[in-house]
Length: 279
Image (cartoon, rainbow, N blue to C red; front, side):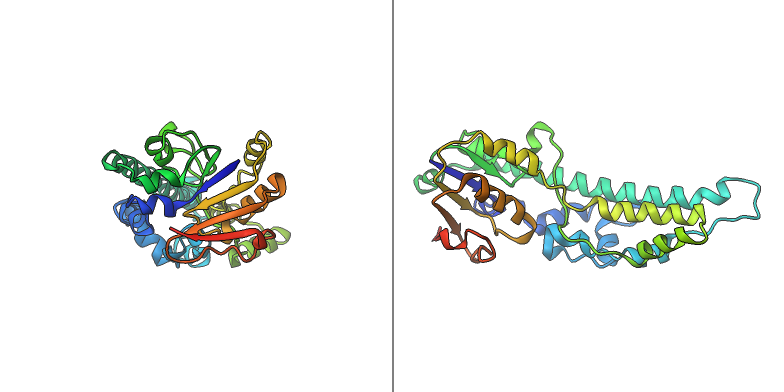
């Protein structure tokens, strides 16, 4: 019995608009705070979208802090003159979070609409000949083209699930180190709270792996002797998922389909069991 794992390369095979450039094109029309564009903001603070899911790990929080953290006016009798900086930073990050989430949803919606024009060739029909299926995509490609159910490990747009997106490895910014030191010495509530909002924003985009959900799903599968991977790069950001599948199912072999670049399977504990196939 086979377990199928589907990645974004599968959607791209059908020419669905789920490329990095498609996501960026949507984000480019999203407003961030103070009328700037969300894409301009992210790129202006060091985000490299070529890395896609890991991209937000590159945002330069320190530069952002230097540009936007405001000193309170302690001479004023009005609290609003002291805490306006906190409100300002909160508006910034709320707008940016909203821009990312809306862009993911709009990209998924556009891709689903494109599915209506697609009819499968006989070769494409044979790519997936049964269940179970784990999809790393937000789209309804498997459900609409293959009329099969699957477990969407990163969320399923069509039923309104939260769409999981983010980086794997974070870094400790200068303001985070400073804040930890400041807590041991002098503490300025108004400035430190602004730093905390920025730090929380940065760490909120660390990918929230759904390991428990995947383990529960896999525990219900029996007799899996082959795992078939189609359209997934098997990169580091999702490596914990693949190792969990290997550890629980212990399949006899992994069949990995590739179209252009060969997936990064060499680092895995099951690398010797991988059979590569071009499609």
